[in-house]
Length: 79
Length: 301
Image (cartoon, rainbow over all chains, first blue to last red):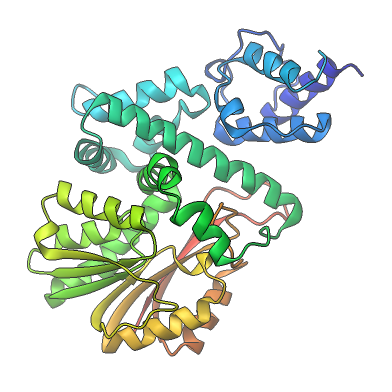
């Protein structure tokens, strides 16, 4: 499974949207289950899966999925 | 939802939606759960504490950072079911005596959580409907708030009882300053004093018939000793409102209470009699065997 496939699986699992397409412009406004708890669950699951630990200020700056892609790359995760 | 009636609340909603979309449903959820009374209280609080748009935006930034830090710690707690080992002095250095952290994140975060976290808001309504109502009916003349935090309950008490005077204690200079600011912004400071004091280690001769101590026990290494001191401060025949957070993994929570009975047993061991209690979970349990954070409040004599 590629890193992108792992990431998609995490989003689908946490947001309970098995058909979710992970486009860079996607935001929490577009998905009804995407509240602060889900947001943190995504972050924590990604941290576990990819062995990284994000600075709190870094993940607060995420506005959409594209921002998260860039953040992951900054932390050394190839997508 | 707003109809031009709640400009500050509307701005708060817009900041959430624009800047923190994962918080975008917060205000709508509050309105749906608690209605106009809640909206009026939030509007008043925002107007009193964050008069300019810049102040409100800064407070929201602090709140979101505070809330997300709590949520991430809680998510890690789900695996370990233990708080990380810390001493009170470590937490004091990291949090209570760290003015920048307190002023930017902790105090605005905690203050807004009283209105925006349903379990915190429900607890303040319990306080108002029971303890504060008794104070009003009995014509309470003075109270002590042991661990003022943001000064939220001190302020509610002073506002509800026009003849009362109060004394608050806290270990944090930033808390003292913030509590005094809140009380002053509601024009109640002429009846209130806030003092820097660690009630666990520093002696005081203060006594009261009406004692408040909210969100303190879980911050201590030895909450039973603290409760024994509170028992001495509360005069015989007096009444106390004492709360604790359970299974809530926050940056400054040291003592892990896993259920309300553990708090109740310490209260009884310290010499209090339980008159009433209410326990409120932060949210619906998500999984079996993963504890849900909750707040528990006791009215004691």
